[in-house]
Image 1 (spheres, one colour):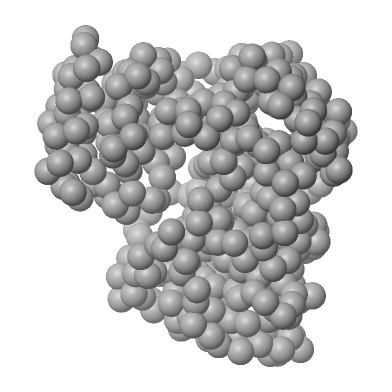
Image 2 (cartoon, helix red, strand yellow):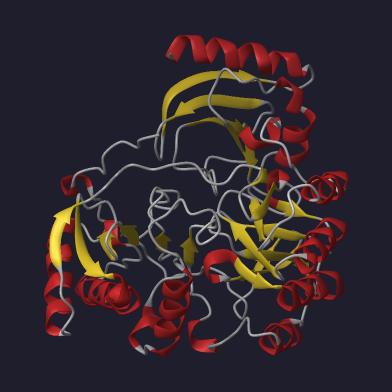
Length: 439
């Protein structure tokens, strides 16, 4: 599918903040209603089996036993007991999940999860991923990036190009790549071998521009918050690349995006969807043991999924592996309604939530039809984690029930009715009416 063209730089909005970046990490825990929360950055979502086992141990021994995926393919541990920060850091450090304590919150990198597995892209982005992570951890300047700043490495298929990243690198034919910043309609062409260094220079150039805003008393965490035409920053990055001896040229940005991997068998890989991005201990163990049986690696996706590379996959045997994963409650069929449903954490984990949205989303699953946009359930108006693509907002109301609205970007565009879930069929009827009204 094709996304709308990036909004023009005149629409980039200067954001005023009166506090520092409080985004949680592995070392900076967040106090939630259900206990402390840790967000563990996993660049590209790539985990070795030993690292996955360590995360399971941390969840079981220190938290609520579950592993929660984020929209950036990272992992959150919830319900952590008081005073466990040092023990958690030790567990993560021992398996290489904390390569730099000073940079642990800025290692936000998404990457095409099927890269190198199905031949659909122009490049295998794994060398870019390793190179960028190493470059970030070696940069003193990069320590100042916000925990919300995002890099996206797209192998050319367009799957992570639509994730609203601050620095997006997309492979193109001929061994080159296009680097773009925020919502800019322009991109900078660089050689594939220069991607990691170029992405770091782009982030450091952003920091230089953001420093001017900070001096004027305004915190800036992301590229589109600078309040200046993003194309100006693009040209400053191009100048910085040239000064570093990196050949580059300004091009028009490719805005075509595609969906992430569907559940099932994808060439030499198995793919599953994780309902609401929450994995129980049993589900995580089944996923990890299956990965161990095949390539020994898991790739968590930004779409509440996991890809298990399986070099030389025996396609006659693969259905049995998928059946085991399905028996554990993971989605292995592209026909599942779970692929059309997402939700924030809701109650009891979030004090601001007006409802247990995950339980309500599960209870109303049968009401989700195929003739409307995907649903995203939110416990309050903040709508944490909501998708950028078109969807239907299902937002809990303070007085009970859920308010529906059709969203095509970051804000609801078409309001709908408020429904109660005493009878889930009421939701189904309201969804059809909203779709008919906005078709």
